[in-house]
Amino acid sequence: MRKKVYAVLVTSKASVSKVSSEGYSSLAKAQAFIESRAGNPQKISHWRYRDDDWTEYLICEVRVDLGEE
Image (cartoon, rainbow, N blue to C red):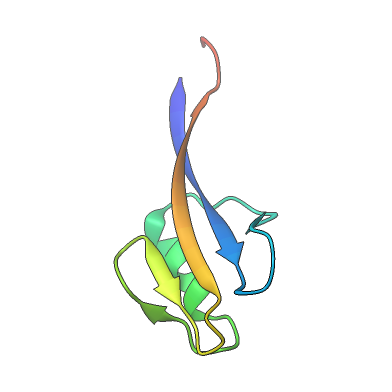
């Protein structure tokens, strides 16, 4: 069985990229996580946001193979 999950890659202008510690079961839930963050993240595309401090958020679709059932 295969499943899609969504992780958020966060990159501040003066830092290394970090992957969110949680995965999200839908694109909408990943977007809601980003939109709830401080710094007023603005949507650039369905997959990418940037906030007032130039922190970038990139949603990555990850396919997980859960093996055979």
